[in-house]
Structures are given as C-alpha cells and as structure tokens.
Length: 330
Image 1 (cartoon, one colour):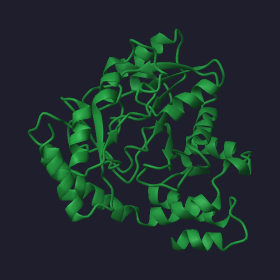
Image 2: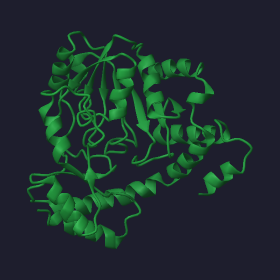
Image 3: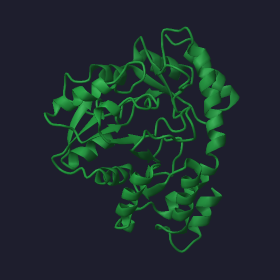
C-alpha cells in the first residue's frame, strides 16, 4: 500500500522510476540476465515470438491447457497452432504429445510454448530431442522446487504473467525475460525499439514492487498450506498433480483432479463455506480453440479439476476448514 500511495503522489504514473525499481529488483531476485516489463501477457508474448522471428504463417506447438489469452494472441497474429495433449498425472505435454501436435498443422513447428498445466516445471532436457526453441510461461510453476527461485530450460525465453491469480501480481502486466546471455541479447535489441505504451506503468510497477518484497514470506506460507492439504487428500481417490522424484509444483493454487462429480464437489465445498473454481475454465481447450476430438486428456482435466484456495492470507482456522473439506470430498 505504501509503495502504491507513494507512486500516486508523484507527477507521473507512466513508465518511470517505479518501473525501473521493479525491473532492477526482479532481475536481482530471479537472476535474470535481461527482462522487459510489459502492460499485458499478450505484449510479453509478442516480444518472445519476435525473439524467435515467428510471424504470420509460421507454426508453433502449444499445450491444450495453455491459457486462452495465449491462443487468442497466436490466432490474431496468424500463427498456426499444433495442439499438444497432456499427461493426466502432471498436466504437461510429453515430447510425443508435442510431436503429435506438430503433425496436426502439416508443417514443421518453429517453437514450443510451454504453458498452463498443473504447476509442475518441465523436466530438464525432456524436449531436447525435438530440436526447437522454447517459450516457457512460468506463471503457474513460479518458484517450484528446483535450484533457485526460477529456472528456465536451456535456451529458453520465459514469460511471467502478473495478472490476477499469479503468486506475484502487479494488478496487470507481465515479464518477458532470459537467463542466458544469447537470449538476453536478442531481447535487449528488441526492447530498444519498444514504445512506452507497451511498457508497464509506474502504477502497476509500484504494486509489483511491494508484492516482490513480500514474495518469500508469501511462498513460505503457501508451501505450508500445500503440505497440509496434501496430507488431507493422502490415500483418497482424488489426486493432485505430481511428478517423480522430489519435484513439487509451484504454489499458485491447490488443484484437485476429481474422480466424482465436480458439481457435487463444488456444492459440498460451498456448503462448508469454502469457495472453489474450475482449474482450467480459462484454458484453450475449454474455450473452443482446440478442435473437437483432439487432446482428450486435456479435455478430461478441464472438466474435472477443481482449484482450492492457496494464498498467504489464509489463517489457521481457514486452513483447517479447507483441509477438512479436502479430506471428506464426496
């Protein structure tokens, strides 16, 4: 609140001093080699596509669980999309899923876009055999258990939406960034010609700056809640997304893949004063972008995955209430 009010007291709320402070703090916290703050995720995606010289008529392979804004942005740019199905256990496409998606567009895709899913980070080296550059949206798997607060696949340009629902939000906007020197140079060259109207305003940056300062504390709380909720569903028929080894999802929310009626689960949770929502209501597969008959696993997850609250403002009483509901879901 102090950060935002201080910004409002200045003469300008366009891209200025708070923009630069947020940018500097984000680069230091996440270890970016270079980063651009934009006014929307669609603007950030446009920069990432330009970095790979993707244009009208080119093709990319995309997870069917990617957010609908991503499908909208690609369609409006005239880029062909090869939709990749996902694993029911992780919510992420396998290399074979991406290969099938590429076959559907009848041409060789020029990039992979990793986005959406259950919050699990992709396995390092998993997509190397496809030989394609990767654009990776880390919004849902921000600060998943790996080395450092954010780890990109090698040679990748990353996106981080800062819209509502992200563990780190600026009330609107996004980051497009690189951790490798080669990719950072490409982004830096593109940023030199970026109009101010594409850059994040100081008003949003001031909120993001305050959120970033509290991110560590918030993530600790979210991970504590996730551990409690995992215990609640342990041994039950309903599951959350899991991956082998010690990998844990990012703490954006707590998704539960139901083995019974999702409407009954929503009604039961509401009766116990716990609000839930469909996990993939805003995904490409649920929004009509993916042709009928394609990506059956993604369609199944979109129809039966429910999000339970997972944020740092949940107190002990609220956490226990959610835990009891999870343990007794019909």
